Image (cartoon, rainbow, N blue to C red; front, side, top):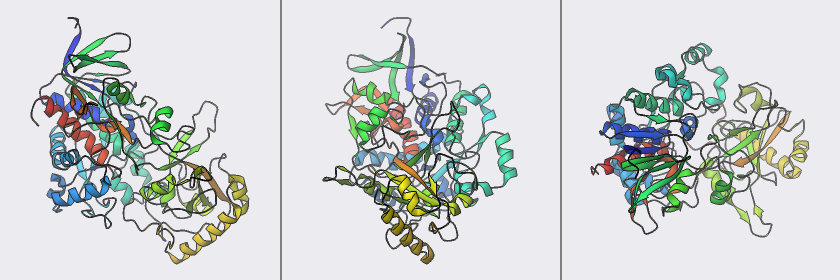
Length: 540
């Protein structure tokens, strides 16, 4: 290798939660570290998340007097996994995540318990808890970043100026127009950040305080390999950077890569619609970098992690289409429903993991998916009381959204069965008046981040005008680079590739399998970044 090449102990690719956690852990363990970010800003997909960190048996819940048990956490994780987990990696997650949480807290990341948010499958799955396992960061001001304040990707769809716990207590995101306007204004003025935006800001501040070098807008062309060991990276343009201990792939998933999305997820609509809130830089770099040197690319089948979204056309020249994830607001609120081309409901709209199998249903004779595309149907009662397209309740519905004064007329505009939609609305309205969804038990699941109205998630669709918007699945990233319980990337010969690690969305989610629990991913990002550094030092 050239003698004038810059050398570090650890090189981290990506500056989302996984990458910043890896850089912070490496520095705290005495290793010289460089973080490289492809985008001109840090944050990646993390900033668009609600920032929940799911950790069983953590010290914060223990301090609050909430009992938990390792066996219950394992039971719950096995339920979540649906038979597609790596048992060793899952156990590493269960046993080492509390340790990683405490480690990063000692680094200055300010965590707090989230009250009022249950495990997703509380009351359904063995080992589920009503509270205690969901952790989030305290609010932090962007001003604490100094010159880096505006170098964090800013979310456009997450109210980051409140914590997740406050959001629930204040009435949910679908009622944000009723939040205390003075508190909101004061926090915005101070640039207070919570949720995923706050999580990234906390980790970035910790990295900046330690003067960990972060290079933005730097594109890696390929990994450097010497005698079978990854020893550094080659930057686009020819620069070479060496890593004595290892390289950590934390580049995120392939949310913004339509080709990979269609090939790996296999659902209609993914390649043709904006299906992600991720920045354009998240294109599956880890899959390419690890794959071309023999790393295994692993897909988790029957993945339940994807949601439904809709696209709002630009209202002004130069604007981009707006992708809105509907699962937390629209689908959880009264006066809404989701139907297929027959105008029929097909699942409990309020629980996206319950909808996922129905969205995959395929008719082998008609040669199309039974429930895709789907359509969100709502009325003016919803529009007046709840948020649509990230706008305050009562705002004008965007002009591009079809509407009609009659349900049958709306069906014709959308291209769904008019007879089917009329019958479905009538049946649904009966359920709304009775307060019980006898078809799909809508709203009976205990987990939610939106405040449900007087009649729970049920409310009749009966007040004109009626609206309909086409829904499409979001990119769920069911596929990633296969790693073991220490975050080591696995070669096709089923051995670790020396010097190469992965964490976060870049890694195949084999610790959690098919299921979703907010937010195992962020906890796994922190934990396996931490464990990768320990493995480099022989401490695992």
